[in-house]
Image (tube, rainbow, N blue to C red; front, side):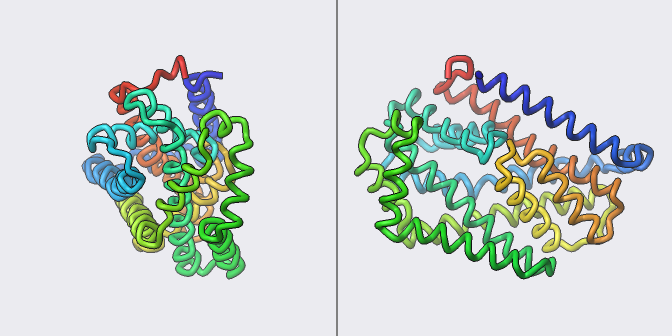
Length: 312
C-alpha cells in the first residue's frame, strides 16, 4: 500500500478517535472550553514547538558529520523536517525514508545513512526514558515504573556498548528483508554505529534530546494557559506529556494515536482537571504538536527533491 494511502487511513482513524473522545465528553463543556481558547497564544505555542526541533536538528546534523557524510546544512535541514511527515508511522520506523531521500537527492548510499537514523532513534528513546523517569518521580507514580525505565535503559546501553551483543544484534538485523536489501557492507554498518555511539556523541545526543522534551513541554504548558488552566506547574506538565508520548510510542500504534491522548487525559484528570476538559486539551495538544510537525514535514518533503510518495 502506498504511503499516501496509509496516511489517509491514519488521518481518518485519528478523526474517528477524536470524534469518539468528543462523544465521550460533555459536548456543551467541550464547546465552551474550545471557545475559551485565546488565539493570541497561538504564535507563541507554534514558535515553541518549532524551536523544540532545533536541538533535534543539531543532533541529526552532528550524527551525519560524525559519520563523515558531507550534507549541506540546508539539505540536511530539509531532510530532517521531511522526516516529521513519517512520525505517524508505527514506532516512527518511517524515519528510514530519510535514507531514501538522501540516496535519491545526494546519491549517499543507504548503508551509510540507515545506521545513522537508527542510532538517532535510539538516542530519542533514551532521552524520552530519562525525561520520563523525571516525570515518574515528580508525579509520584508507582516506583515499579522507575524500575522498568531503568531496566529499559540498561538493556539499551548493553546492546550499544557490549560488542558481542551488538554484533549479534546487527547480524540478526541484516537478515531481515528490508535491511538485507539495503545493507551491503555489514562491517561499514558496524563502524558507523560504533562512531555514532562514542561517549562524547552519546552525552551530547541525549542532552539535546532531553532539551527537546523540556521545550515541547513548555509549548504544552502554554496550551493550558491559553485555556486559563493553571492548576499544574510547568514540570508536572512536562512529566505528563513525556510519559504519555512514551506510552504511545511503546504501544507501536501509528503516532500513538488514541493511546497518547488517553494517557494525557487520564493524567490530567488525576491531577484535578475535569475529564471533558482533559479530553479537549489532549486533542488540542496533539493537533498543535504532532499534527503541526507532520504538516511541516510534508511541506518540506516537496522541497527535498529526493522522494515521490507515489513511486516509493
